[in-house]
Image (cartoon, rainbow, N blue to C red; front, side, top):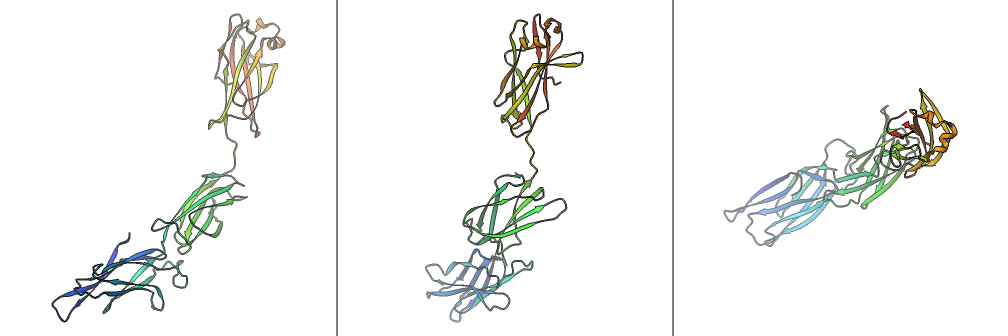
Length: 358
């Protein structure tokens, strides 16, 4: 009848006028959920009469039976074969139940037939549905806004009407906790925003429960971390080839800076060319430039700039040309200088070896 196991209670009745008998039957779940529609089966089995039989279904409080929690009537007749399923729903009232208690709680379920009543004590449960929680992100920083969605369903997978209790639990290494508790009235999907401000880093938890069953929590976790600027890498690539002939006017390098997740860096690059000889670096001062690196940019050193620092260009044969690039993002983060060496053969060509850092 429901997702719970059912119990059947039977009372035999033997007539005085014929050698036949019929049974009063009431079948119900072994556990009744408060605030949720349940179904009770009643039947007069093997009944040979034609008169309709009224049956009253009653749920009363435990243990004193002083208050009817639910009452309904059904008529058994030949049209329904003297059997029927009756929908019952026990409303949650704090005066009748203590949902905070860990002790088992019960009600009396009673079916009153014309000549006999069938009654049974049944345990109740406050598990009236399910709550799904989802945050818009899994990691947050201080002063950021957490948006989370609460989707509450009853046992029949329909939106609930009862309030939901929400707790924001902060868990830190010292095992201390801070709570924020409030109630929200749900209709279907609800977004609620809390701002994280000056709270400890670590794992946070959103715990939600139905107001009539605060002991049963549904949770979702997220992490609060200190904001760290993302890492990026700088790539240096020659424009045409890795060779520089003695009669070339300039040598160009493409500078491309990307974050590790693939997005281009917005910022500036400081570029300088120089000669590396006998373990020493000698900058070509006139080659120092500042360029924007958005979506890649070219920087170059000209033969004229080399001659300004080294008038005897033939004396550089066998020396090494290097390129040093430092990138500064718009957010203020800088990279360590990235270097590329070039082996110089000015009489024929410059052979450039990329990928080796200084």
